[in-house]
Amino acid sequence: MNPQRSLISRIRSILTALFAVFGAVGVAAAADNAHGPYSTKGDLALWALPTFLLFLFAVYKLGWESFTRGMQEREETQNRLIGEAEAARSEAEELLRDHRGRMEAVDEEIRELIAEAHRDAEHTRQDIVQSARSEAETIKRRALREIERVRDQSLDEIFLTLNNRVISATEDRIRGRLTPTDHQQLINQALGEFAGSTL
Image 1 (cartoon, rainbow, N blue to C red):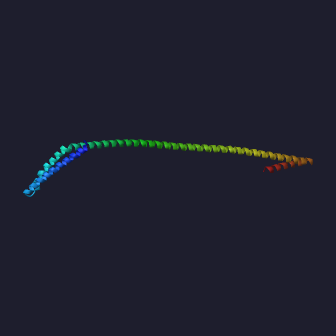
Image 2 (cartoon, helix red, strand yellow):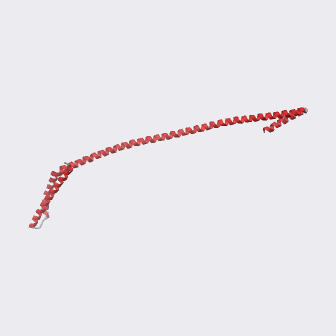
Image 3 (spheres, rainbow, N blue to C red):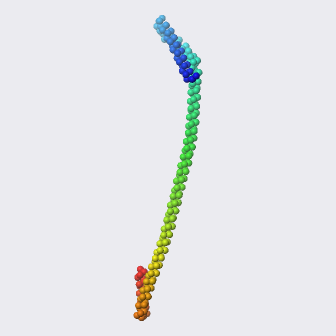
């Protein structure tokens, strides 16, 4: 049988008994009223105590055990739920601590990755700068070699031209019989032409 229905039927029985008792008290009071004025001082105190005792007896016999069992079950249920809630709270706190620990570890790992990325970027930047410097130095050396080659080629052409002019002038002078003064003038002229062409 369902304990809740049993409790309801017992409460109905108690209420029925109470109505019967109060009804009997009302009938007795009405009978006394027929003989004279009703006095509440003596009758009320006389009937209140036995009625209350009868009520307590009826409650004890009909529903007290059910009431205490229901209250005890309710208390046990409440205690069990409180225990489960505390266990769940403890577990949640443990999970929260674990989660915070993991988040701190992830944060630390992220900081390390960022620091490593900065180091790699700096290393790459230095490699690029070094490579650019090396390439610039190579280009500079190649340009200097090219300049020297062009200069040497130009000087060779100048000397060849000068040589041809000296030979031509010498031939012209020799034909006209050179004197030592003429020879010296010829050399000075050739050197002057050479100095003028190199500037």
